[in-house]
Length: 124
Image 1 (cartoon, rainbow, N blue to C red):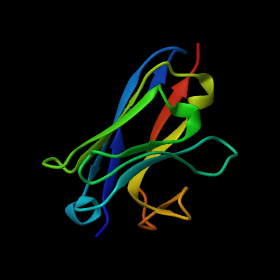
Image 2: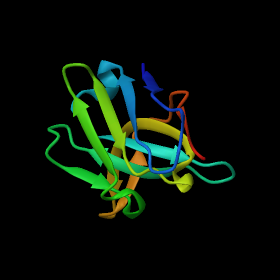
Image 3: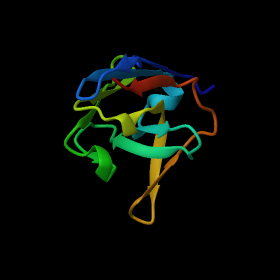
Image 4: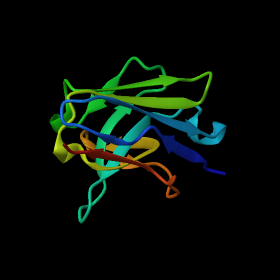
């Protein structure tokens, strides 16, 4: 059974920081590349970042490069997203999932099931 529980989102001012966490079930987490997605109001869900099982490889959408850092703790089945220098356009519900890449660039969620997400609102 796929279980994903995201947490850590809240209201923050522009320029602020947040750290999101995603606790995953063993089946969901083990040996998988994990990723974060986000969905802003009225928009489709988009890929944000991914990290390989070993943690040695990370990938980011251009809009968050240099501001967001993805990491994981395999002993805790948890993946994190450290978000710095937040902007209003980062406002969205953030989700995690196991991920895979096709055509060399496009990232997809491995599982159809999603957690409840965590709301990040960047506003003054």
